[in-house]
Length: 189
Image (cartoon, rainbow, N blue to C red; front, side, top):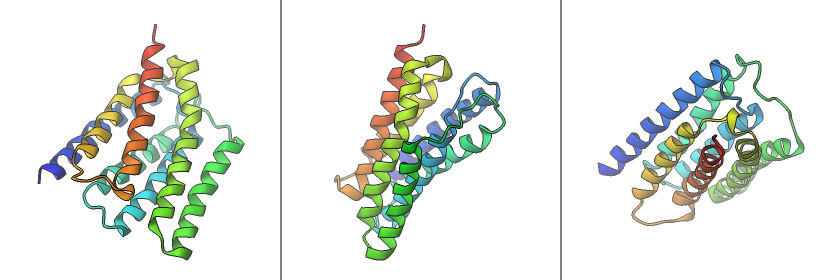
């Protein structure tokens, strides 16, 4: 029961961060990378399906939420004309990895392969936003990223044991969000 409470609390905190990000995007104060946010909605969804197949439990709710929240930002980013929309080779590669993960999972019936490809896709999709947060901190706000870190940490705190299927995605997600938080916060003047 405490695990479910902590996960739901983390999702709620992350939801507040997402709502703030959406508001700042609509006001033109944040410029999300549309391709990154689109891939961030695919990769966690693949991981969520694979975690569910492996019987991970309530921790899958966090993975599902970190698919839905970026999807909402991706959709809202079309309202902000200053949002980035440049498809790079890395963006295409990440999208293909996500789809390949689904295909391999379907063909081989091995959910851990889908999680592995989702991790690669997620990490590569994060690079453009990390670079942007470091180089152009005025295009980001650190607080939504901190909310994501808290969500990840609360999910990790609920695990009785750490296995690839239950912890790989939350660990990567938490580290990524922490780095973006640091880059966007450290460079604020």
